[in-house]
Length: 217
Image (cartoon, rainbow, N blue to C red):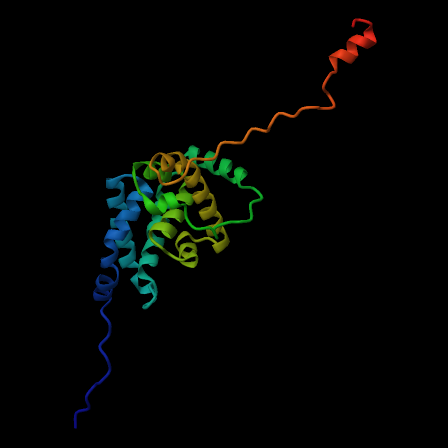
């Protein structure tokens, strides 16, 4: 008597890869463009990311966030292949000094300017951010990853993610304030109110008394 083998068929890694990873190609390319700021470099970055993902598919945990897993590969490739400019390091130090001692990190909502518009001004402001800050803002406010997922993508503690988000958002808000005011998105900053002039100050000189005491009256 022949016994039927009712065990489920072995999963096909290639089919799983195509089903799970390929739908995220557009998101990968969009993020790669924002990382590299160059369409050709972004294409190369995505191609290398997908190749690495296929070779490492055995490490992907079924049921986990495939998009975040792919973003981590793309981020690592970008960081390893892209030399950070001296300008980024200088700006990062400047921003760190500006917010030193500020304990309110990333709890605040992203700048309203970033939520409501993504114009050329916003893109320029994003491009001017230090690389780590720009990546954190993009992953959180545009790709809507959680802090934990961003920490996994950027391979850093959640506290570091929150710090980078706070500083990146603060720098964006400062850069975009003038543009948002011009577009009617934000109200102009209030002008400082001049203090009223005081009379009868203790330092006021009584000229009549001075002349009497001098015998000049």
